[in-house]
Image 1 (cartoon, rainbow, N blue to C red):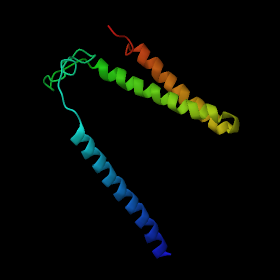
Image 2: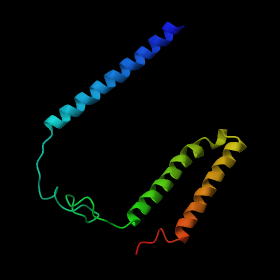
Image 3: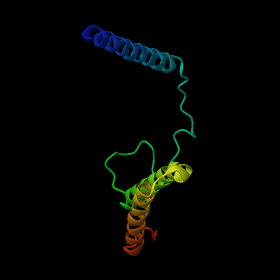
Image 4: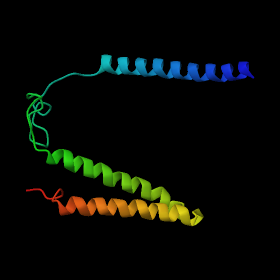
Length: 122
């Protein structure tokens, strides 16, 4: 029994080792053959308006973080709703009400964010 378990773990370790070696080889090859040219388009300001090679310690508005966090929250809501909607016909009442509770909590969070003005951009 112990030998069988060790054999199974050996195959997992071989798989991890091969995956790491392959990742390192692919990364080093792509780094070696990449074309590195700086042009005006590459050095221009990004969509947010900041210079790409400016001081890293510059401050900017916290609303960027707030919008990003709200986007992640509601994006995850959509990611959970799709599998739930697909398997709704095979689900019992406990699964149905658990998702209703989840949507209700996210709705309360959305209402709160709207109420405190987190979604307003002035």
